[in-house]
Length: 514
Image (cartoon, rainbow, N blue to C red; front, side):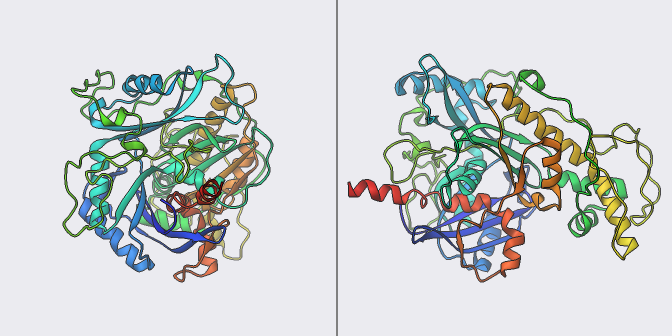
């Protein structure tokens, strides 16, 4: 669908982000945007537990943000209910691939095959595939019940669902597809690291095409819990400390890290996305009838199926799938051919981490009575940790709190750097020329001061905090330019969702003229 305005809706574990977007000249314009809290009683572990309550929260945020459009493109996430992977398969015809994916989904996910929505898209590399070389396929699978609840929530918010996307796919669209297309050498590779509250999504793109996705269960909440644990304060106080004085205190360079290369770094397998009540090795249930989700042109790419439930009577606009069978649509709107830049999706796997709330090399000991302004506890030196320095401002109490908060966060920061290193080394181990040229940080926790510099020192790759608003025109009146600059890293997903049906319109118009 070309033209018009679209709502991009991104629901996180702590915050809801919304944008209204439309075409503007040769670019894309943000008409309005907003951010608000996610009701904790309505959303747990990336799953909706109260669709009506969450829908009302979204509806209230839309009103506060001045968003009037109702056509919505939203996203789904969650390690237990959504799986997005890039898999390699032998080159074959479209019909053969469709048949193969019936069995591939059973092998890749722990869900019963008749309880999921599945879609896939071949990734056409610019250099093509040599004869006998395997081709890459982007696979997205989501549990049907989760998607049904998601669509129920959208109806409760007064929105008209047009498509359901996956989060990292939208983030890649925002950072790599919007704005001027800069000339880059063939093979240019970017890692997008989206550091949220509960998880950190890592997506490696070569020539703007997904090569490797991974999700780490390590992000801003882990930093907050570590502060609360070390300083013996409650979670709200720890969060306030993190936001007020939290920063990465840079000192001398850390010692070189051991290399984690090849499949052995991950035990040779993917993380088990097991669902409670389903044994990881349980055989998937067999379908009793052909599924429309496995057919070419099926629901995941915009096809329609019979609605199992009807939308509320107040909904006048017909949607493709009121029951929740909405597409993970990787197709380029307005174009006949497959997209040139499918981007990445949700989790693949993670390596179980060592405990992050104890200082490495030091046994756990009872903490003294809480005194956040006291002298930081001595720790055993660890070359993997950022190096603390003494305070330099005129307020010694604030300086001491700043150092104490940093020392509390340091083990988690070190673990995050280690897991990112493992991801990069695993990717490099898959190909002789698999280099990563830059890292872009987004997400609320990416705003931690000096985090980009610290990761650049640890990983040896140029790293910066990306600004998702830099390539769009923003006309929102709710926030000052200073506020927008500070908030920018929160919106890569919602912008990418809202821009999904807008950014390829110029190409479609050129084809019509021919």
